[in-house]
Amino acid sequence: MPHLSFKKVNIPTCGDAFSMVPCDTPGCAVLMGASSPYYRMGHPPPDREGPYCSLVRVTPEGGIRSFGIRDCIVPSDMWGVSVTRMEDGKVLMFGGHHGDEEAVNSLYTYNMGTNEWTEVPHTEGAPWPQGKWRHFAFAIGSVLVIGAGVPSLYHEDWDNDALMATWAYDTETGIWTRLAGYPTPNVYWASGTLVGDTFHLIGKFTHMTFSLRDGWTVLCDHDTHTHLGPGQCAVCTIGQYVVCMGGNGYTYRTVNAYDTVSGTWEKWATEGYEDGSGDGCAVPVGGDSILLRTDGHCYLVTLNRGAMLPGCIQGEE
Image (cartoon, rainbow, N blue to C red; front, side, top):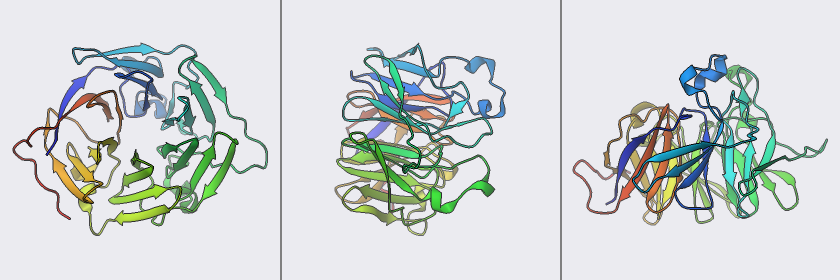
């Protein structure tokens, strides 16, 4: 059974508020969003100041080099955005929020090759999702799909119907379409990953899948799979596995993997995973390497496909 090795790496803007997408070349990722939760309270810590769009490269020695991206449009206090790589190579950035303000529903395209930003115009009266932050987003072909998230910092402002809404944006027609919402209200801070053309959503003790053909399907919920944990883990695809790293509660510093072939969960062993609390995100950076962001910490994660380490146990169904 595989296991993961974690190496803590120094990224100047590493915090708990940015999102990541892979570049065109292996060993590279683009980071967008504020670098620290303190920005939401208007008190940026001086050691976290820096560019809010960064290019990160993994060196042959397994280190990290970080470069600020010029002309970045992401405000210094914008966090909770989603960034999604589309099939044409462009990146779509949606949502996020500034400080104590409500989340925005702005949509931007970013061309990594030319370093050009374009705001997608919102036609008055046309369907358009409400503002969100800490939402999920993924691409199937030319279609961007978003959902979950929250509209503001304050629970009393949350509209459950809006939280459960799923929206699809067709980059070819420029039209948003509201899809059927997912069938449980449990998930608002959620993470996910694509395996083929199926999206796996993990969050708040729940595992669901989505496809444009079949819509949402609940695979497990709070009553049957509490090992998924109450918080937002970092999720990525490794071969046939949906791999969940960290999260809040008792999933702290743990790795759980879902085998999409057998339909079973496994707990993987880890080396060097020192801090893994809070929400997170992960992105492949070539080969068997993953760049992981958790609360205030960044790791370069390497997959070991050999025999499992002592302590690696089969997850219970």
